Length: 101
Image (cartoon, rainbow, N blue to C red; front, side, top):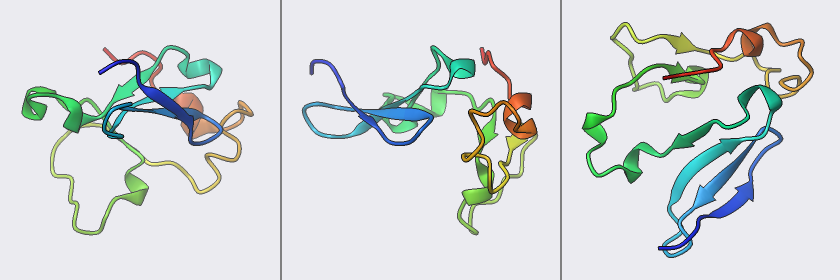
């Protein structure tokens, strides 16, 4: 399988793809507050149902048919979140947990 191929997809993150088939596997964050964070694609796990949900991020862009009916924490970002995410002045960004376990 080898090493993933990385693509800088935005100002705050890069995505890791399988070098053999092109499937997206990871998101690695490049802002200082999230140094070391890597999100893994749920579909890349052998048993996605075994992975517990800890938080829903970016739910403001979810499809209308997706309804959340559990008590898992939800984070919605304001429209200008990405624009000032690295400025240190975004209250939503600053309030996000920095160490999920």
